[in-house]
Each structure stands twice: as structure tokens, then as C-alpha cells.
Image 1 (spheres, rainbow, N blue to C red):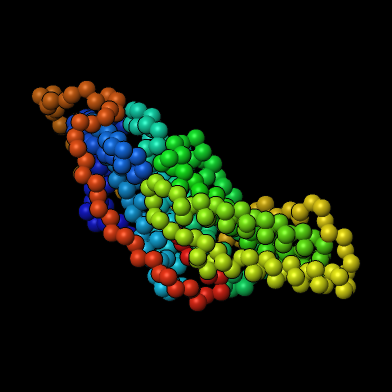
Image 2: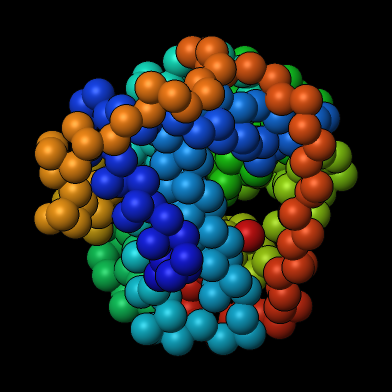
Length: 359
């Protein structure tokens, strides 16, 4: 799934970074912008091969997320394609984790608020990729009609991941990151609504109608909050795709599902059980037994056998011009924005049972 050219470049850089103190590590100056703040012209440069390597890994992670979105936006997504989406997002999460773990190798790289190397941004990417990979798992569980208890637990875990992703962005500039955070918040509330919907179904099957009624009412409240976030998201400005999540089938299905379970629980309770409606909402399962997604660990490719200590020692760079790039600094160069083709987004409802798509 890596572009061949970038894969070769990462391999070459891995060779230069193998030795802890490589004589060629600081020989060249590298420049880069950022995904979100590039549009207000933040352009940085530093003479450190680690800076270039981490940028390449990060760019490949971003490409994997876009590739996953491209696959998921088709009119119909096959099972094999859903697995590929799942794999892309897990790999992307692992790459973001790798960047986060190694960013301290580049002096000052994480000091620019809102840049791709900002720990808050990286953490949001990690949580979002993991959450969206788990969306595939939730959809699969619904399609295969697994137990409502398992689906509820998976949806709850997914909601928590989106909540963590949104919380990572709360201290960043709302004019730039507000739209992204709204996306996380609406997804967190949507999956919380699904968690309560399937919890209500599970409780109803156990003849616990009073608790089922309370769970469904809580789910409807979560859906209303999600609808409010979706409305704000569709009207918000800033970087990112302009979408209307409230129009997607997966979003539209949860309210009828909750009301159907609630109506049945209230009907059965009034005719048979006569249970008191619980004041406290039943607790959602904190940890799903199966199906939790983990990031796929990423490591740099191994160096070629010919790149050894003797080869490194043979480099004589004493006459090379090496400016002081000990810390990252703002570049004087101009950056031409990369033109991205707009992703196709189907306006058809999926024919599957879950109705799940990645926004």
C-alpha cells in the first residue's frame, strides 16, 4: 500500500538513520509544511534526516487514511474492500504512533502548535484511525447479527475513542481545528446512541424492561446531541471535507432503532412486567470481549547489508558546507499547495444491514 517511490525513499533514509550518530544525518536541509496550518503559511526547515523520515512516514499515514476513505465512499463496498479499509486505518495509526514515539529526535519539531508534529494532533490522528477501523468492526458485527451485548460494547468502545480524539484537540485554535473536533464529538455521541440501542435490546431479551426503557431514552438523548453536532459540523468552516453526516443511512437508522426498542419495552412493561423505570441509566459494558482494534506497529525498513559502520566512517564531510540548523526554524521558501482531487462520495444508501460508511 506504499507508493513505490516513497517506499524507496524511506528505505534510503532508514540507511542513513541506522547509526546513532551518522556523519551524514545533518548534511542536508529538509523542508516541510503541515496538514492543517499550512494554509496560514507555516513552513519549517531543519538539517536533520530524521525530520524528512518522519515527514515521509506521516505523509504515508495520511495517504492511507485518504485511501481508506476513497474505498469506503463507493456505492457498494465489498467484504474484501472493507478488510482493506480496516488494514489501511490500522497501519496509519501505527505510523502516527511511530512519528509520536520518535519526534523528540528532531529538536523543536513538536513546538509549533497545530503542526503535524504537535503531540495533540498526532494523538487525535491515532485515536481517530483506531476508532474508524473499529467502525468497520461494528458494522461487521451488525451485519453478522452478533449478540446485542457485544455490539453495544464495541459501539461504546468506539465512542470512547472518538471522545479521546476530540479531547486531544480542545486546546488548539478552534478557528482551525474546531471543525475536526465537531466531527469527533458527533461520532462519539452517535456511537454512544448505538451502544444504548443495543443495550436496550439486550436488556429487553433478558426481560428487564424497566432498565431497557431507561437505556433507550438515554440513547435518544445521545442521538439528539449527535444531531446538534452534525448540524454545527455541516455549517462549520475550516480545513477538511464539507459533508452532511446527518444524511447518511448509518446516522438516520439509530433513532428508529431506539424508538422501536423503546416502544416494545414500554408495551411489554405495561402489559406484563409492570417494572418501575430506573432513575439511573444502566451501565454500558466498559470493555468489549472481542473485536477491539489495535494499531499495526510500524518500523523503518532494515538497512541494506552494504550500509555498515565502515561505510559510514568512510564519509569525509569536513569540507562540506554545514550551516547551523540545530533547531527547526521558519523557512523563507514559498510552498506551492498540493492540489488534491475531491473524493467521490456516493449519495446512495448502502444496501447492507448496518448502513455504515466512513465520512
